Amino acid sequence: MQAPQAPKIHSPKIFAITNQKGGVGKTTTAVNLATAFSALGHRVLLVDIDPQGNAGTGLGLKRANIKSSIYDVLFGRATANEAAMRTKLPRLNIIPSSVHLAGADVELSSVIGREARLKEALEECHNNYDYIFIDCPPSLNFLTINALVAAQAIIVPLQCEFYALEGLSQLTKTVKLVKKHYNAALDIHGIVLTMYDRRNRITKLVDEDVREYFKNKVYNTTIPRNVRLSEAPSYGLPGIVYDMKSAGAQAYIKLAREILSKDNKPLSGSSKPSNNDVTQKEQTEVA
Image 1 (cartoon, one colour):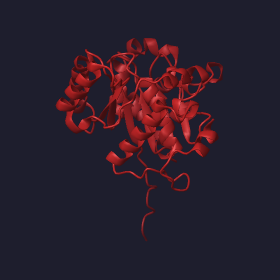
Image 2: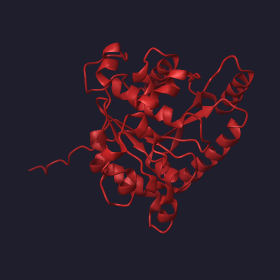
Image 3: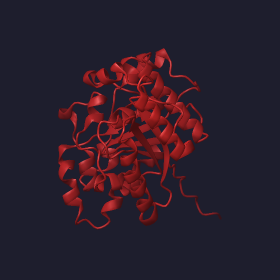
C-alpha cells in the first residue's frame, strides 16, 4: 500500500523592487506592475515594506481599515495571510506598510535570524499567489536585506540622471553579499529606465552607459515621464487604471509582458480565460 503523497507546494515568483536612491519611480513601478500582472489573470500579492507606505495609498487603501501590517508579520503578531488585504482590483492583494517600520532596523538588530523573517513569513501564503512583488525602502537596511533574502529576482527602477550608475554599483555589491551568505538563487532580473525623456541628452547617455555595462539585464521597455502616472496616486488608483491609454500606463503593460516573456511564462494567468491583452473591459473591472 502506497503512502499518501504530500500536497504539492506551489512556489510563486518573488520580485524585490529596489533601489537605495529615492524618487526613481520604485513604488510606481511596484504598484503598476502588480496591477498589470493581475489584469493579465495572475494572482498577485504586493508587499509594502517601505515605511512611507505609498504603495497602499496608490491602491486606494484607507489607513483606518488596516488591522495588521507587514510590521506585525515581521514580528510574529500576525501571519502573512491575516495581514493580506483585498484591493479594488481582482486578483491583487496587498500587505500594507506601517509607520512603525521606521524603527524596525533597530528592533531587528537583536533578533536571531533577522535577515530571513520576511522569507519565512511569506512561505505560508505561497499557494495563494503566482507572483509576489516587494516594494522596498529607498535604503540598504535590514528591511531591504529581508526583501532580497525572500526574493528570487530583483527589478531595479533606474532614473535617467547623472548619478544613476553610482547608486547601482552599491546595489550590485549588496546583491553579491546576499547571494554569498543568504540567498544563492538571487539575481538581478532586470533594470528598467524610468522618467525617460528622449528630448534630454542625459537620458540618452545614461541609457547607453547602462546598456553597455549591464547588457541584456536592461529591459527594452522604458518608462517615460508622464503626468498621468504622477496624478494617479492622489486618486487612489494605479496609473494603468487611472488612464490606461496614457503613455506611462502603456509602458508598464508592455514591461509586464516583457518580464513574463523573459521568464518564458504565459502572458495570461489561469484565473481567467486566456487573453494576451489588458483590455478596456479589464480597466472597467478594476476601476
